[in-house]
Image (tube, rainbow, N blue to C red; front, top):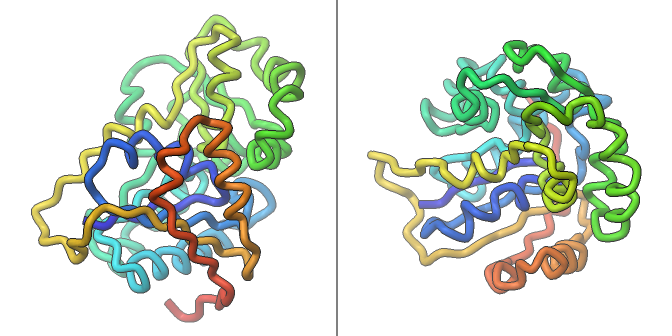
Length: 260
């Protein structure tokens, strides 16, 4: 079966790495650098349009059997327009990180750190204590290798100093890149990578893709090639074995979605 993974930038790929490593399925990981970040500076309508464009790519160009929305922001948009989107692409075709996270948390009391869009969307309203992460966090994550020390010494400790006695949920997949830094802090943190790795991908439908396992990275940045950056990051995170599975597809022509 071919599984699509959607996020802006590299966060979704890193968050999904354990699922990818332990699965026999084929994966298409769409990193939407063109619209990075989703969580700040975009309207609901813009995000809905972006979501449909990328779902079209994954379902109709790469023939994915299912798509996992790894981004909390884009998942909140999906849930708001779920009936409309499911009518376009089919029921039970899309798995979103917000629903997975809520099921994982259950009735446990947690604190949330997420982007402004995710916090203000109300999708996590059952969590009473919420903080909006600094806008720079996503950019720092995208440049993880160069900014690791500044993150540990200033950015993260100053954001969570008053949450140290509770469980912290990181509600943005880009923050999975900070996993080792949070672990060094000794705080009780829920990483969405741990939630995603246990997704049940079994289906009663006949899969459309029966090839041997492969991993394809799709970039949507008007032709900009991020392959060197990806390989460098994988090496830094000791994930070199995944590198052998990568096939880079640079998407040079991004067309606007009309009348879908």
